[in-house]
Every structure is written in C-alpha cells, then in structure tokens.
Length: 272
Image 1 (spheres, rainbow, N blue to C red):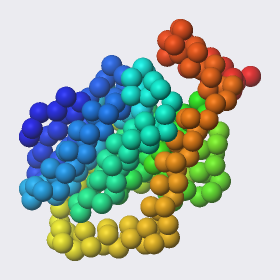
Image 2 (cartoon, one colour; image 1 turned 90 degrees about the vertical axis):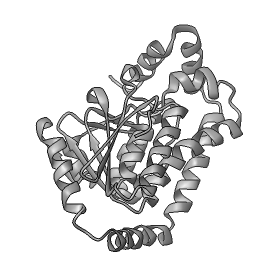
Image 3 (cartoon, rainbow, N blue to C red; image 1 turned 135 degrees about the horizontal axis):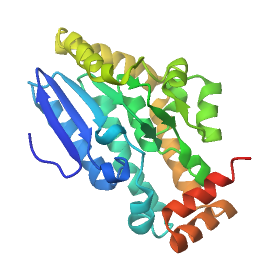
Image 4 (spheres, rainbow, N blue to C red; image 1 turned 135 degrees about the vertical axis):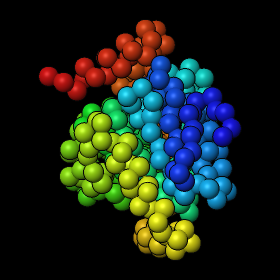
C-alpha cells in the first residue's frame, strides 16, 4: 500500500483497514486527511483484491471532527463564503466516496466521533462502536452547522433535532437506540466483530452486493438526500459568514487565548 501522511492503511483477507493517524489532535481532520481518505477509497474501488473497507482511528478515538485550530488559523482565517464552501467540498467528497463505493464500508468507532467524522461514520454502510464511544455534533455550540447533512436520513426527527440543535454528545448505547449504530461491543470485541462482518460480506458476489447497495442508496437519493446534503453545506457556509455575538467572542478568544481557552468559554455557556 502507498504511504500516507495522516492514515495507516493495511489490507488482509480482502479487508482494507483505513485508520486515521493524527493522534496528537484526536485524529481531527485537516484538508490533507480528508484528501488522503478520498484517495484511499478511490484506490480501494480500483483494487479487485479489496472486498470490504473498514474505517477507524488510532489512539483510542475515531476522530474529533474538523481540526478547527488548523482551519481558523489558516484555510478559514478570512470569513469568505467561497473559502468555507471549498473547505466543505473537500470533506464532503470523501463522505460521498464512502456512500458511492461499490463495496461495503464499515465504521469502527472508539472514543470521540464528532462533527465531520460523525457524518462520515453515518455515510458508511455499517457502523459499530465500543462502549467508550461518544458521538455528536458539538460544533453547533459554536454557531456552526454540519456540512454533510445526513443525520435526518439516518435517525428520526426527534433524535436528529437532539443531536443537531442541542450540541450534546451521546453514548454508544444511546446511538444504538437512535439507529446510528448496528451494534455496540465491549472494547476487546470491536475489531473481531468488524472482521467477522467483513468475512460474511466477502461471501457475496460483489456484482450483486453492490447492486443491492446502490438500490438502497438510490431510494434515499430519490427522496432528496443529495439535495438535503447540498442544502446543509450552504447552511454551513451561511452559519460561518453570518456574524453573531457568540461566534465573534469565540474568535476573539481563539485569537487572543488559544483554542483550548476559547472552547472552555463556549462550553461554560451551556452548563449551570
């Protein structure tokens, strides 16, 4: 396998395992990691030896979502609509690559699975987590919005509103009741469970399997999933270029005191 800067990629017995490897930032996504994920998925699509793809994170976390420190200090330092739109397009392209891949994709979740990573996990065909998992869209606490708006298609309205309007994180057990996960495992059982499902899936004729995946996905697309995701991206752009008191003070604190202090201030707004 080709070397990657932000991923560990291995393949054995038809299973390609993609593991995010930016442990120092809880595997948060910069643009390089999104692009490398898309490249790894494109390679998997063209490799007949790869029958199933699993996505996970190194160091005990799936991913903390978008790397806001890198983004706000670089690509998104100037609040220009096209900059936010181009930024979202990179991550969304990787999520669409998962959705459209003619092979099974499984997310294997430990620890934090937040923001853009949460959306990516929901785009997978199967989602497994261990009991350490915490999932959600905490970026809404920063007056932000999810750029890949798939949540309303995966769970019910009440559950989607809880995730998208409160910013609270949920446990793996709650995510299972919401329909986000297929199964919750004990920590030592997560990888064997994923490998067991992968082995089962390799028993199918790939041509037939991908036709069935396509049929299910097309049903959601006909109902409007693609338009919903595109609308969500535009809501993400609008949320980031529309001034408000919370966002303004957060950015002032970020520039003056650093990301950690700014996040602590935001979190303090939502607790007694």
